[in-house]
Image 1 (cartoon, rainbow, N blue to C red):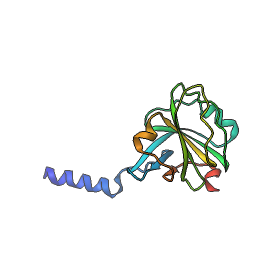
Image 2: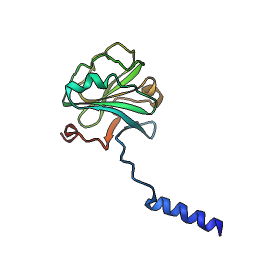
Image 3: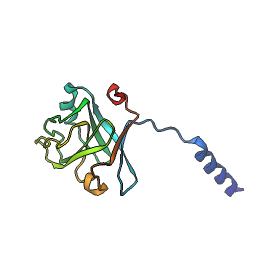
Length: 150
C-alpha cells in the first residue's frame, strides 16, 4: 500500500502538481553541455540603469542582464560588483558574439569585438567551466522588457 501511495505522489508531481517557475532567468545553451539556468539578480534595459546594475553582486548561479535597444559595440561601465566577473555578449537573435573573462572589480570590460544587444554578467570562471563559445545561445526567460521584443 505504501508503494502505491508514493507512486501516485510521483505521478501527480510529474503531471503538473509542481508549481510553474516564473523566476526571471537567463539560460545559456552551449554545444558541449546542456542548458545552464542562471537567476537574474538584476536587469537594466535603460542607459541610466546600467551603471547601477554593474554594481550588483553576482553570486554563483546568478547573473546580471544588460539590454540595449540596438546591437552596436556598446562600452560598458566599470565592474563595481566587488568581484571579478565574466561578461557574455549576445546579438538580438540571442547568439553569443563575444565574451570577456576575468574582468576585475573597478575596471571596465574591454570593448566587444562584435556588435551586441545583450550582455550577461556572470561569476568569474563560468565561461570556461561551461565551455562557452561564439555561436552558442543566451535566452532570457520570464523577463519583461520591450527590448526583448525587437
